[in-house]
Length: 306
Image (cartoon, rainbow, N blue to C red; front, side, top):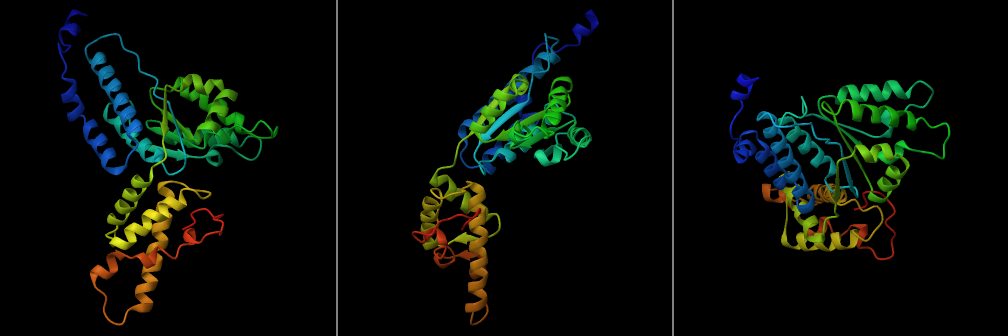
């Protein structure tokens, strides 16, 4: 006992741990990858700090218990929940809280069967794949359908709750979805609320952040806006945010896909000779301004409308 105590470190440099374990690298990557989301990034940093301190306490022989790390991510579509879950899995792995650090992303259909005896094997197979990493359940509230007495979601819920309690040293579960629906889900399933330690709310992006996201997405594919296109895209964002089925960065990606499609058709049909790299890389006003989003009085009823 005394010999074991002698081998314990007298002091640990937490900042050095933060750097050498690669946590700083992951958080810097998250900053570069995602625009905005300051409260979310701050909370992730706080969780990382807690885990580094807990790791140090364990190394120094202090009273230690693995913290509960299951989480709830709430927010509208396209606000970066899956990306943050991926980075969280990486941090947990680097700090030794999960063995593999992979992310398994699922929805209700991956967990719940359509007939008696089908749900348990499906849920257990998903959990088997997720062990040693993070299980991300998007739109988790769809697991619970009390209006349908023949629904098997409750069976999946009971298995998940058991594993979240008994295997929390080898699996972290992150639930995700709209805030109001997740609140109702927790009210109906208090077992989940009691097992969730961290609740992170993902705010919508503002207009400026969405324009930065658009420019970043284009740059990642070696495209850019010309000045007129950038101004038109800013106006597009302002209008699109007020229309149905807006999904933040996801809607921006859809809009850019359509802009690139229009650009390709413009170049193909209008070119009178060879095109330059500049031509092939530039999105112009004409590639965006024809969007139906700019047509007053035309309802935008389709997902991904651009």
